[in-house]
Image 1 (cartoon, rainbow, N blue to C red):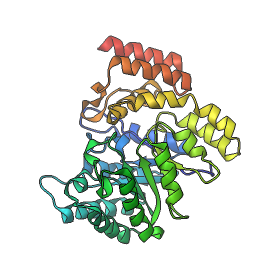
Image 2: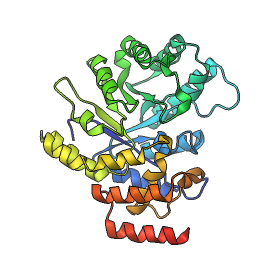
Image 3: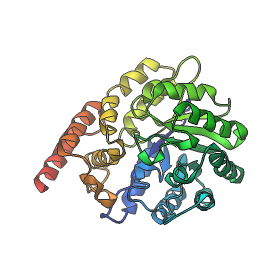
Image 4: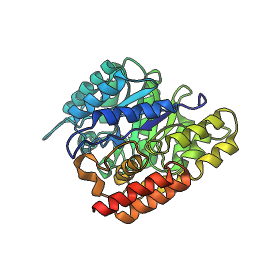
Amino acid sequence: MSSRIVFAAAHVVAADERTVDWDATLAFRHHLWSHGLGVAEAMDTAQRGMGLDWPTAAELVRRSAAEKTGRICAGVATDQLTGEAGLDDVLNAYLEQLDVVQEAGAQPVLMCSRRLAAVARGPEDYEKVYGTLLDRVSEPVILHWLGTAFDPELEGYWGSADIPQATRNLLEIIHSRPDKVDGVKVSLLDAGHEIGLRRALPENVRCYTGDDFNYPDLIAGDEQGHSHALLGIFDPIAPVAAKALAKLAEGDTDEFHRIMAPTVPLSRHLFSAPTYYYKTGVVFLAWLAGHQERFQLIGGLETARSVEHLAEAKRLAEIAGVIEPEFAERRWRQWLASR
């Protein structure tokens, strides 16, 4: 898989509604590493901002980084803030988390901040915050652009609700410090926009697709380039994705697409609106695959999707080859009987 840098945004395994099952959570990271995927830690898939608080996220980063056997990056955000906060408070919150991630030995991912979106007056405030952060980093980082389908509170990020203008604002930040930016992870679910953005990036800056609808074509790329990946869907499809990426590394693009194609209907289903509840389906499939003993999420989020939605997820996962049908059927019947 050397032709692409690929991270799977990993979920956390809940011991109960409030606490993390650390053994099972770390075992799942080793599962991802064993397939040659990097781990994107403490990201949205880990319920960042939807049940996972900053102290627990910090512990998660430290524990995962201490056990890493492959690539690891980790989310830097501002979710420790409570009450009213100004721009300086947002910056200081980012800096606090950046120090934790760097000290742990993970590559920082500068995540979008709801608090920054709320207080920023325009692109100059984004330049101030991100410029300061990039000046502080000890290695090139990944910037993170999460669209409103994933988080409606991020409307107007980068200083404009107009996506082309927001893109220009982001590119100005990147072009001002290209040696500090490893790449940008873009999750707008718009393949055309992503292709345009990656073609406008400096030569040394990667585009990491976060598009869980169109990832095979974006990763395969075209004559002008390709995307790398930082994807939530790679959590449940890791073994299949690894096989496909190995074929791509060999130059067999047709076989890459053949293996990946059945995973796309599954991903589009899991990430269907409201998209931010995709975590429920991801954990459900981890349970059906035997990676954990309970179908439970932090904060009780396992109830966020209907029985019908989960039944379709199971069917599509079987077609995609990411769960073993007989084992999954036993667990499915067990779960239905317990309701």
